[in-house]
Length: 547
Image (cartoon, rainbow, N blue to C red; front, side, top):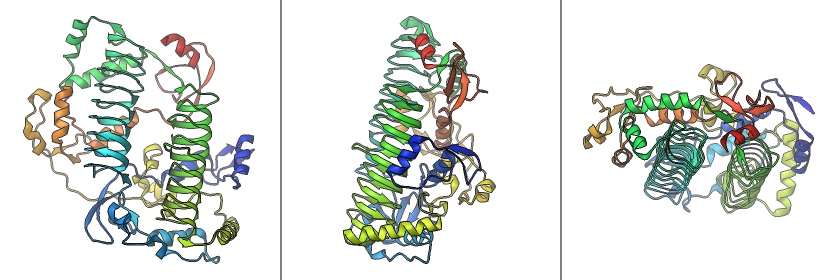
């Protein structure tokens, strides 16, 4: 079935499998194309910005994912979880003379929001959407890590700096889409590395520099074998100084372009299409499915079973039967909702935990049979819920994710800006909110950072540095300096935000293009657009080349 997106006016297809899923979950067919649906969800996900604001209950200064100019109430985590307030006190009856959106907006403005979504962290206050961290700083969307700094989607790691989408790693720096790595720097799309630098698509390697597509190799430089002495002599010319690292990056990129790249990274999976999918089955148009997923479509950053249209979903337990969700963890049968944890049978709700059978609720935990934060009996709950759904069908709201006006953030504060960037005028024209940057007078850098880490004094931790890209001020932590010295790597000359953008830009777009394998000529789907300079092979030709 072909449909036309009501937003961008582009055509999109609804397959027979899609129809079966929409029938199974008893929801109307989507009116927006997959891309516009994803953008609408991403508007509800702030992954990078933290602000100072004041608690609405105690007045104390707190760090928050919501800036002080937002109209929402914010409680500190300890206050939000305490018995000092009751979210049920804000409940009210649904008014069938008004839309769902205007009434849910009223509820969102009334019920306090938690300042940071962290769990069981120790000495890791400046983090967001994390759990079980110790001695970490500016980690976003991560967990089970210790002594890590400036990371996004980082888990089960220790003593790492500036990591993006990395797991089970230790003593690593500036790695992207990698796991099980030890003492490795500037590596991407690699597994099981030890003492490797600037490597791409390498597995099981030790002491390799600037290599691509290697398997279980040691003492290789730019895909050529060297002796141990030759290798160690070579890398000494580049490590330690910013000038040396920049020269090495250029040389590594030149080598990167000489070797073929796999059209899609899909491992141990059956009938899957997308990128970074592992140990899964029947996952189509999915990206960054960690593993063990099945029967999914249009899911980014997660693992699930029987789910469509989600961003950031998964958990340790079964997460299944999801539709149009953001940040649903250990959840079952969740539709049109944001931040739902350890819960089931929930629709059109925001930040509800350890609950079931909720509709149009926010801020609830350990509740059941509630609508707009008001308690019902089981029988009355289902009767009232169905009545509201019929009303929402008449207003054109049921079957659609939350209206963008319900989002707490400006477009440029959200994940939408990272994947689908817009200028302010473009965002406002589309009806999205925008957050103007807070006016700050950044101070010029008076201190000259030594090029080589060996020349950097302890006193640098007292200096105020200025990013060479955006001029934003930043500082070097004492723990950070210790690791740079241990790594023999130079002091970064860019702020954490600019470094993050550079890492993210190393990842391929979450979009598929048609190309031909440059080895056998077969038609392939790939995340490398046709105009890009990389050599792209189909899976079969790539495996023959590498193995």
